[in-house]
Length: 392
Image (cartoon, rainbow, N blue to C red; front, side, top):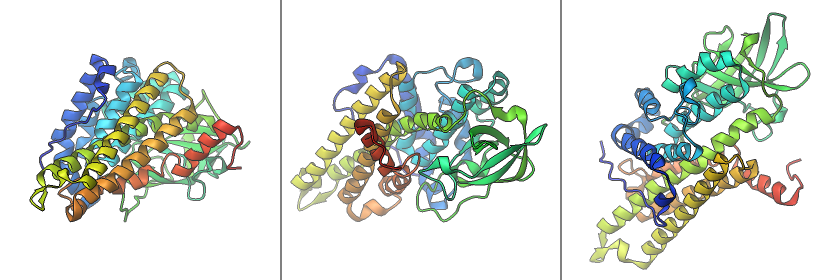
């Protein structure tokens, strides 16, 4: 087990923009990652296993639905607190952050926003405590960037709905107790359904042979004439805007989370460069390594300021979907570039499990694609500034 010596960079004194509550929440998550994630994560990634033993700890630090009101089991925190928690968890591993992000933004959020009071009381407290784990079914084998083309559907059978179809690339699917499934009714309108494990015809085969997010469980959702009780339909919003609203929350969390991965790579590279001696001096004293490190901290600082400002806008209810897309795209690209540069600072050692960099780099290859690909987010910005959609 490696010792976690991480020290968070804060070149622009961004801590001064945070409240005392923000810092308490962030520091609790940071300390938990050091104690419970860092010692086991390399082994979990090498074995391609999700460490279920950490679920209780994620709940304890408020990682499940931190902004959900306390009456439903959440922590009642603001959006910046949510972002900081995601930052710290992804500093440990993107796959672990994915688990928490899905639970919060893609499972608890839609139940809270679109569900009935009965659904909120039934599911949210158990999801907040980690007793229940959830997943989110939108992407299909043939419909990724174009979710409106989905073929998963349900029919009204009087006292229940009959659900058929399949979803793919679903985080948490292999062990999830419930799935938030987006499907079309007989009129082609998209609705959200809560599907529970154990319903006949519902299966969740695991996806194997991944080179990325190896410490996260990924799978499929298959629905073969699944009878879903009518009370499991979330009635308060329908249409494609419903799942996209969930994705806004998740993408916002990613914009913060990617900073954590970048910070870890930078911190590792900086420490290594100071200790690694070649040609009779630490390589940190060479111009090329200083260029890499200086550019890393510059890009991290820019991303921190963008995420903080976006958090303020989210708190005020002013953030647009396009603004969230810009932050997700920018910050993940920033992180993956820093991971690649940091790997070069470490030379051959950078590819080993002794350091976190290569694991972050592989994970970020998924993060840059899921919940809106890098290119689609670019086109969202393009549409927002020109008023002309390029993907139709």
